[in-house]
Amino acid sequence: MRVKSYILTLLLIISSCASAQKTVRVNAVKANDYGVVYSLPVTSFEVTLTIKKSTYQRGDFYTFAQRYLAIDNPVIENRVVYSLEDINVVNRGIPDKNNSYMVAFRPKSVEPFVFLREDGLIVSINAEPESEVRADLIIPAGVSGSENPRRYLSQETLMAGSTAKQAELVARQIFDLRRSRSDILSGEAESMPPDGNAYNVVMSEIDRQEKALTELFAGSLETEYFTKTVVVVPEQNNIDRQVIARFSEKLGVVDVDNLAGEPIYLSLTNKTPKVDMQLSAKELQRLESKLSEGIVYNIPAKADLVIEFKNRVAKNMEVDVVQFGTKDVLVRRMFDNNKQPIKVFFYPELGAVKQVVQ
Image (cartoon, helix red, strand yellow):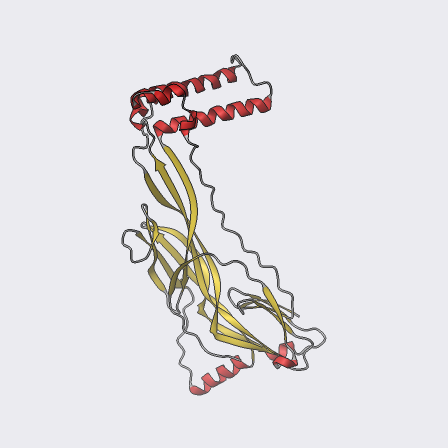
């Protein structure tokens, strides 16, 4: 039974990705008039932006980087830079409570049941649901900065009277570390590590100290990755370069009305336009009757989704869109076979029939 038709507007929100939902079995029994109410979804797109945050920290001796260590491009100012590394798009079905129906069985049907998601979307009829696998988005690991280099400074360096003298002594300490590494590698060190484990410990400590002390000249870089998700719910019309977010190298993702960021555009084009049919009152009544006599499901249409950023196409893919499609009905008499009940599997995110098993 159809409850109400839907009209959905474009929605732009920032949110986190939804996790896979559990399913619930609902039996069609006399107490509920052998009917189970379910919702059909509308299509939404979760556009997930993977962002890299790079934090540059100037070293205390950056002005001496070229003189003592021949470093031509040290970090000369503290700054944070954001970069847009990847864009991922996932089709998610959102229950439309204004587009609810009832799976109505005849009383003589043999123990019919329906599996629904917790949000009311239909999953299967007379069958255990298939496992729903959602691939997790892989976020790269960041790079942390070195530990405090001052813990490795000698007493002489700490007592030096000027920054220039401190830089000279630290540079000498770095060269001593490099010489120690070279001596161990060549087997000429006065005190060689006794075994492989000791060798690894010694070399790791030399590397750690050299890196930390060198950052006093070259500067340090820390990187971390995180995501922001924009959810777009289309209407029944095409979308032409809609600004869904803005991105700034200094601020990261900002609101669509913040002109400090460059726009990220989304376009959605229906590949199977609907035919505009003028139905008479009798035809409309016949259509309503058809939708009320069976199990209504969606037939999504194909569309091209394109995301643009900085005058280039960042994403181009074919997608299924419920709002661009139509509906049809599985007639109720299909489920009257008491000896071998019909099993129906759905795509919960689309409300479309996946498989009918007799």
